[in-house]
Image (cartoon, rainbow, N blue to C red):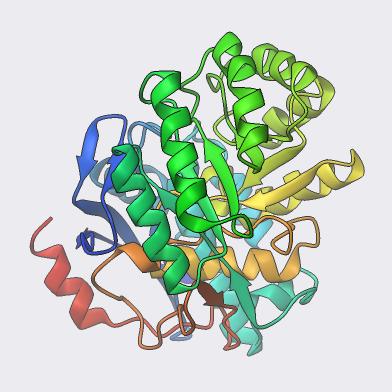
Amino acid sequence: MKITQIETLPVTVPIDRRVGQVKDAKGFRFQSRLLLIFVHTDCGIEGGGEVTASPDWSGETSLGAKALIDTHLSPRLIGEDPRRIRHCMDRLSKTFANPFAKAGLEMALFDILGKSLNTPVYQLLGGAVREGQLPLRFPVMPVGPAESADAARRMVHEGFQTIKLKVGHDPLSYDIERLRLVREAVGSEVRITVDANGGWSVNEAIRAAPYLEEYGVLFVEQPVHRLDLEGLAEVRRNIRLPIMADESVFTVQDALRCIQLRAADIISVYPGKNGGLLNTLAIASLAEAAGVHCAIGSNMEWDIGSATMAHACAAIPNICVERYAADIIGAFFHTERSIETPLMTEPACVRIPEGAGLGIEVVHQLETHLAAGH
């Protein structure tokens, strides 16, 4: 089997404002600009992938990823056997960085391999260690205290049992007031985590800890800047709550340094950020050997990316979704689907696809429609 063609299709997917506002470092976000990838072979099997690009996250954009794949990465894969995934990814590693672009191509390769063997991708990763539905946590964005409480209350009514409160964008006292109202709104049984996205200083994170404990926070995600692993370790030494590293850990080497510095109790992993499923598996295995848990993170993936994340959760024991609900939340926020059967078939849960490859059927007509507005 040989790769004959690689298609890249930029799409713009509207965000469902009825679910809640989406806010990032540059303000409110009303759409996702993504890149879909279709790898074709000489035997007629097609694999699908997705680039969930974000310039503030990995420095990538959908149009930049398209240019990179079309001009630099695709020529290294044309004529190769897509089933030799490690060999293909090694060829891509000659280009620096761009983890989401590389992950999108790897998704398509795994999709092809699974389809060629008539088996789900999670079987190719060692088989399922969990089945059925994956519980999700809902992110409440950095909006006002009353809006935050209302959003959390609505999502708990929808069935979510874990709320992730975004903090670090406003003064600490404002974040604490938002946390207080959210806890009052959802009651004592619902789990709450906080995610500062690196927005706190070391001192702010330490000062926040007693309030976070008072309101029953499960863990603190990325309290300080992504490059300040020493600061992350200092926070961990000085508070009792578990620390999750997200932006600080993209690569296996990042994970090793995080573990060596004892900077985190939990590492957030997902294929896009890590540059592919193989790297996610490597990071999770390394962390497991060091006694560090992993959780599945997110960059607002659409359907192909979300399906890939679900396969990772199914097959990797150290992605502890039973303790730390998954962040496979993109399907909940986007108004359009790119697959025949939605991944969210129950409230606040994502199903693990059971079909061959990624186990999803792509709707090409819809993607063409969405591409027109990119």
